[in-house]
Length: 416
Image (tube, rainbow, N blue to C red; front, side, top):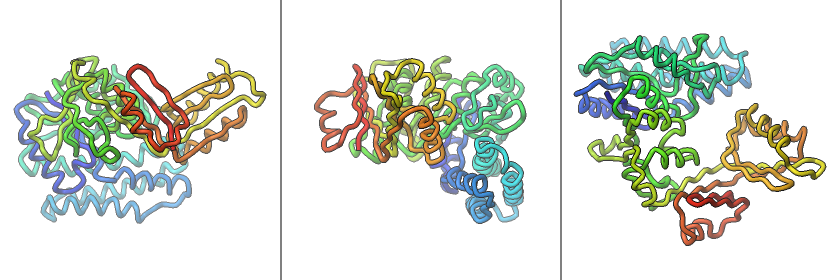
């Protein structure tokens, strides 16, 4: 059995859906689970709807109409005008409008999960019907039918025992095709949860784990897993093969090709992960497995922009001790702010985090209740794996470095 994951870029329009079909047709020799993200920038649009409706109590009908019309336009290129998908898309539009009203007084994270999940539902319904039209029998199911989580909205924690049992109840037949949504799960109360942004990769890994698949393939618009983001580094090179250990390190530091949670369930069952190009589908791509032989062949660069460096110190200039740190971490946990880098001295504790317009102001306000807090915005965080000193000197030339950290294999810099 294989698990294929197609991201939003791979199904951004009708031609992307047609390309997905051509890939699937070449791999029908064994059972296949297909995981699909929301199309193009649908998630971003749904997030705008969330923010507008939840904060301002104003229903953004134009944004909802734009979202549905986009999917209708994609469907119009794939189906005859009398096809039932068009009625279904209108039903989803009505359902979304209802959900936007019904849940507007609930906490934001709950609201987010109920609304943003529509992106994956719309994309997978279109693809389900298109595969059927092209004589590819497939069974569509809601990801939450199998992926069971707790009630931690926007960061649902998988209940592996319940999910394994649910997978047995929704068995895949020999030669069959299952189709579902990335990013989504369901809690015991029956409400949709999401697995964290970019969680579709994680979905593929969860399903591979619970169905005992043989491999996972993530189809992307890059030739494989690169040692750097070509948007920032013009000399980015493909990593042909790396180990789970190295990939976990890279994802921990912020590499965006693989979701940080994706690799652990695959490593546990030794299921190889391939990253391949949906543009050049015959190319080998990258393999992630147990082989550590090639991990240090190339340095890897991970750049995170729009960072905030927050420095925290006691008002009385006393030492930053364990009691302070325990409280500080609890504040970060309360506001669900992830720390990318931390550094402490006798009088200060500094952290580097994403500049989240919703979370950071509240976090800083809460910290100021007990500490002196200073912060710098518009910073970058660069992580370099398997570095040498000449390389580091070239990378930070002309930069104002605020924090520098080095270990045996990894160097990190916060700079402006």
